[in-house]
Length: 232
Image: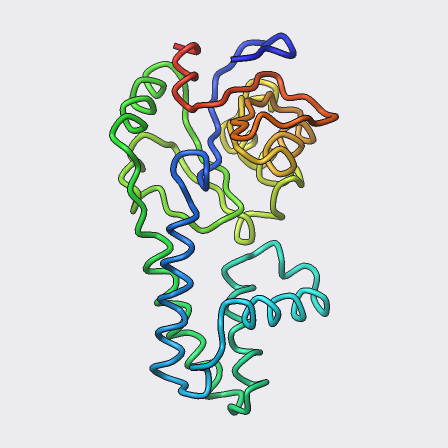
């Protein structure tokens, strides 16, 4: 653990989820494939499309409606619908098939296994701190099997603009009735997690997987989540 700034008293630990508590890459890959399979089943015209095609549909949608980026679930759903319309389906049919494809995506997207040692760490931390989750994604702490350790989880879109905007952090502080400075946010993304937490006046622990060089330092930097045992 590297300490860059002195830590003030901490009452709350806020966790990012994707690539912080588990490896998100295989989860997203499985979810993308489930979506493609559902599309091929319900709309044969999509059989030659791939993830890049659907990503381009989301890019076009975001260009026309930039705010949609803050709700990645709705962004994906509407992107699929727009892609189906572009392939020649009627709007009504495209909407119905998009819902089916997104449901298939979300089922796999929330099929997440947290390693036992991570659960043990969270359980130990929960005896000393209040735990919350703040995510730009749509992972579900209840389906991950760790929901009982957290007071709540906030998600970009339904709960506010995505990190690095301060919305989710400030909402968390208000709901917890604590000053933002008493929250230590832990996450892997320097832009979303470190800058987002600092923008809101929180303290931050950066899970730096790549030993990166950045202009804005967190309070502490760790290379493995287990280093948080130092807080106990």
